[in-house]
Amino acid sequence: MKAQDSPAVPRRRRRLSRGAPLPLLVPALIGVAFLVLPLIALLVRAPWRSMPDLLTSTEVWQALRLSLVCATAATVVSLVVGVPLAWLLARVEFPGRRLVRALVTLPLVLPPVVGGVALLMALGRNGVVGRLLDDWFGVTLPFTTAGVVVAEAFVAMPFLVISVEGTLRAADPRYEEAAATLGASRFTAFRRVTLPLVAPGIAAGAVLAWARALGEFGATITFAGNFPGRTQTMPLAVYLALQNDPEAAIALSLVLLAVSVAVLAGLRDRWMTAS
Image (tube, rainbow, N blue to C red; front, top):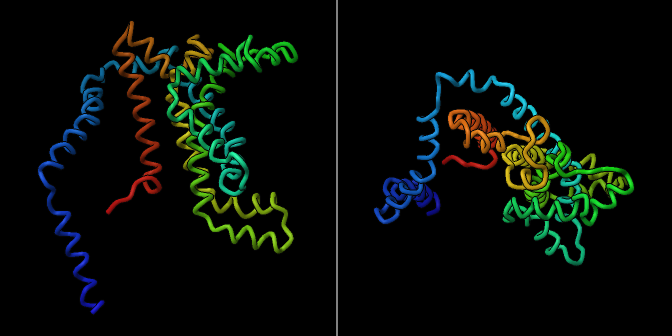
């Protein structure tokens, strides 16, 4: 009976997938058009003939270089503190773990401008911690390149933490327990067993965090300002160019669009499934 029933299941699935009811198909097509049409318009209105000149200007290269450096630095910061944080949330039971997880993921839904204001209140020259940094070490973060890295890490780290925590929860903890029974310390088990086991999740989270840091705008302009060559990243350059040179804004937007498409293409096997 099971041998006779099993071929019918794929046939039923194929029949269900052949057509879609009109009340579902129409809103779905409208949703696709709503999401894709602005991107198509960006491509249609792009100044393709003058694109090389626009993208080779000194201002564009300064913004692009700064964006790449700061996004990479923010990703490194996220890896250094985000991976241990994800391990703590996935492997250790402690009071208030749900609250900590909620606070860690809060930047995902927090308006970026609000995040920038919060960073100013914490790390500004008169901030809670920033005052101590200025008095004790002479370190000032706002309106500096380091401030860009801090702002980008603040909004990008939750992507890494969520990705790594999910991978850790899916990984079998018995490998770590086996390493412990063989005499390995918990840190050695983490370094020699856990990290190789969750390396794909760490890589995916790092790429997502890097892409998010590269496109960060609100927290950056609030906390670090918009100074060419020092804090003006690509999104800030797009905003400034849109006021004075719309064609340059479109060209810069296409660069960021290409980066986003490349990130999605690189993560398609992990974040998308084909059937």
